[in-house]
Image (cartoon, rainbow, N blue to C red; front, side):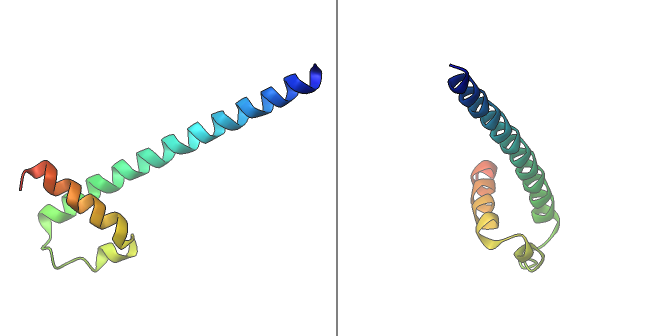
Length: 72
């Protein structure tokens, strides 16, 4: 019985750690989106050279979402 209880406790601890990591990632994504929105309003669309460092795939996804929100 002790072995089963110890295994169950280990599983619960692992789940808690994963949830904490996910929360941190969500906060970082929100901050990035806010920065990109500010950049897009102030800068011309041809100034994408700075955004290449962050990753083209992520930027393209956010760009499409922003257009939907603006109603363009």
